Length: 353
Image (cartoon, rainbow, N blue to C red):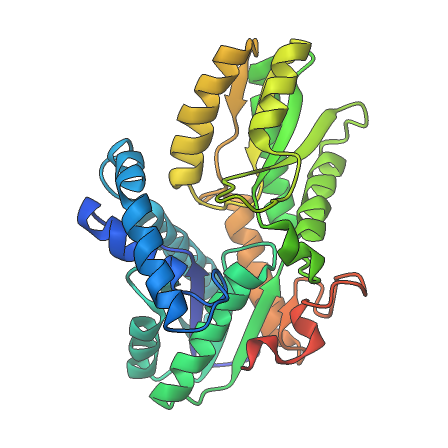
């Protein structure tokens, strides 16, 4: 990257969140109207999205009321974008670097960001999802939406895509640092729960690499701690609906810890920013559950945010991605998924449809 000049646009992708209580229902509609979330064809999917969003909106509004009436995700992502832009500019003074944000289900929506990038007229584009772990309903959906919107807008610029970075060194160092501090707070005998956002088991059964990449991250963090005796487990939160989701669930593991009298340290392993799943689900709902179940100590590790090691890792990831001809690329450049993960984007057309 250091040898190149010109204008570099780095596009950061994330889920997005409502910016007001009035935005909750349309945000949910956008979410459930995504074919990656509900695979039914239109107009059935549109009708289902309208029904589900209307039914879930009151519950979701109550959640956002607890954290100031909106999602903090955009503000926090802007902070990360500014920090990353500064790090990239310092490392590559020959290029003009600008970081953009594309949210999947609320503003700035993908189409808005495509228009903003096109107006800036970059010489190169790097697509960098803020999801460390590839999953079809998150990274896959975001990149597919970008590619479609870019084609419609006639945005034809050399583009590199990062698909996943589950054990990128800077991220692992930041996670280990935050976890070390939390373990000291929790005291002797604490169990670590690496809590990731859940997915339906059917998605994994079709070859999605998400679960395997979560396991890869957790193992790397534990190795970085240098504590082979650490009591740790992976669990999954935020399940919705009657279908079978990834197990064990975070709430079940909290109940187990209560029965065993174990202090808990909970790591939001799949989230790089604070939002409703950390501030409400982990802090308030699961914190209350831990107290009810007799967990003697409940400590939640902060999300990565703008941790210096994390931002440095993202900058290094960007540099290495721009230096390779492999696209999409992982932080190891090529494919890192096992052969049975047929939904890995390195299989081919998943990001090109």
